[in-house]
Image 1 (cartoon, helix red, strand yellow):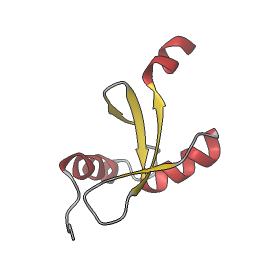
Image 2 (cartoon, one colour):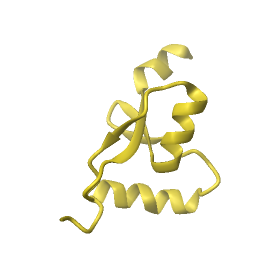
Image 3 (cartoon, one colour):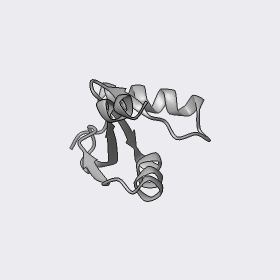
Length: 75
């Protein structure tokens, strides 16, 4: 059993601690991803698919994403 989050999830959590009251859109390549409670909120409020991602622990962490090209095309 793994007991630590992956480096990417650790980085996300570090940034999230600095912005606890905001939805954090975390850029990974061509995607903006949200995790944990932010993923649950974004999925519900933006009507986007909630899924899961391996994060280093035994269970997957909640996750949803928006493709960057969609955001660029909207502008």
